[in-house]
Image (tube, rainbow, N blue to C red; front, top):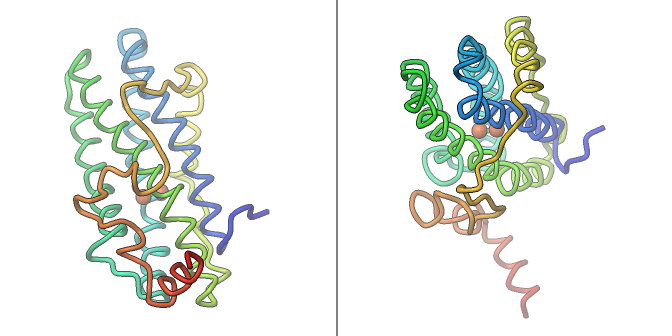
Length: 214
Ligand SMILES: [Fe+2]
Ligand SMILES: [Fe+2]
């Protein structure tokens, strides 16, 4: 059952974020506690981020959800939230490559922390603002049955390969990173994005908002 407002793809992407969160947290613990005893785990984490996070999850956002928002809701792709998210997807690819080339030990932890911080904040942006707002807008525009993709065999394989690692190196948050919901907590707010109201609201939404305030 889709618990989230919006077409089925919204609930699917939010559910997939839980899987990514688990693997990111596990990678973090492994980088701190597991590298020496379990060095071969790094390849399995890297394969997950390449094949599943980038090749499956981000791919659905970039080729299904974002184009639908652009086509049916006139949300721009070249600035605002969708540009921020697409740029972060590209940065994830760079950071995974960096992780692959990092020396074991301390340099790996540095690379892991950069990747983990990026993905945690990325998920916060999507879960707390972009996906709920996108879901409402798509439904309002008559797009209520947009679906995501099913995993292919390669995607199932890399996801299943990290499951024992997530059980062994249980997800660890980073207390040094502030995480929060909404635009005010967003790393891009006021920098590369003006916030959801400024970037996405149309004249009708502003009118509704102002009439509530009166
Ligand atoms: Fe994303
Ligand atoms: Fe996502």
